[in-house]
Image (cartoon, rainbow, N blue to C red):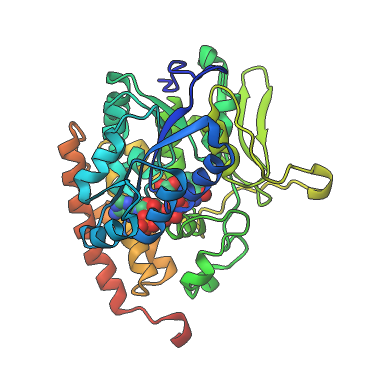
Length: 408
Ligand SMILES: NC(=O)c1ccc[n+]([C@@H]2O[C@H](COP(=O)([O-])OP(=O)(O)OC[C@H]3O[C@@H](n4cnc5c(N)ncnc54)[C@H](OP(=O)(O)O)[C@@H]3O)[C@@H](O)[C@H]2O)c1
């Protein structure tokens, strides 16, 4: 099922597009704000949200003249209110305020929260039939076809922000899907592409978040180091483009210049290229179906020199296999995969488990849980909660044997 409905388009003479950003203080959010500030006349801002970073959220809200700003953590409400004092910008807090931010009148909503925490607000935007710029891939991994059914039922439009999916979208012939043989997601290989298993065992958080080509938030950077990010993206691509696992390929491409490819039955391969800067896909979805001017460095192929490609190593990066297996198993497996991964990544960031324990915890959680059915959003929340509890137990057991890198 193709999701990218060609409706709700903005014409050249259209009034400014009203936008809201869920997760505006994060890496995706900051890139979006940067583009809005560079194209002031084309957009007005309705709502912005953060988790706890009230001071920065208030600064963004003032800069963009937003109407509403909300923090997820109620403990930060006082700080937000104080920082917005005298501005006329309304403040809110807690899960309901995030849903309110998503529901406020906007034409376009950036889903830029990290993790399954973004599910309720992203769904709220979908249920208002908005154009949703979709970065928060964990939402699609945990809620899968139920989320896509909501998109269809409410006439919402999902625009892929993830660079690979955005690239494939630009090369994908939705009118002739039966002519498409496969799509290929490229993958930088992350910071540990050339490390042995033994070396990876001792990698620290600082080393894991040091992505070689992209500048991103901590969770996605660690997912890129384990290659779980690419696994989540396979599941995301399955739902966005309506293709089965065997038509979704992954290739390691360390330069991150080609972002995605579509192979057609006649052997033609269409690829999308660009410098690794998330402002390119965000600019595309901001202006869609037109294009928004964006400032980043232009691609200079002669100075890049060589583009190289490799097959991912399943031994060193088991997360990729786990994600593919979860997609094929179906039901609640992707929900378990996502919840266990979020739990394990948090344990790694907190220094409780080692780098290789992340994928191992996910695998143990998948093995421990029956393949539950995913018939309703209640099932999603239930399976997500249960998987987090089981993953936390496995992570705690691993934590007891974990020696931090500097003591190993
Ligand atoms: N960064 C990239 O280049 C990139 C590329 C492709 C896809 N994505 C996807 O985009 C999403 C955002 O990634 P990111 O790198 O921008 O993450 P990030 O830098 O960690 O930012 C996350 C945003 O979500 C907010 N947030 C965190 N936990 C929350 C919670 N429990 N409830 C409500 N809000 C919460 C954060 O607020 P605080 O600032 O207050 O913590 C922040 O605004 C992820 O799903 C990621 O996979 C990112």
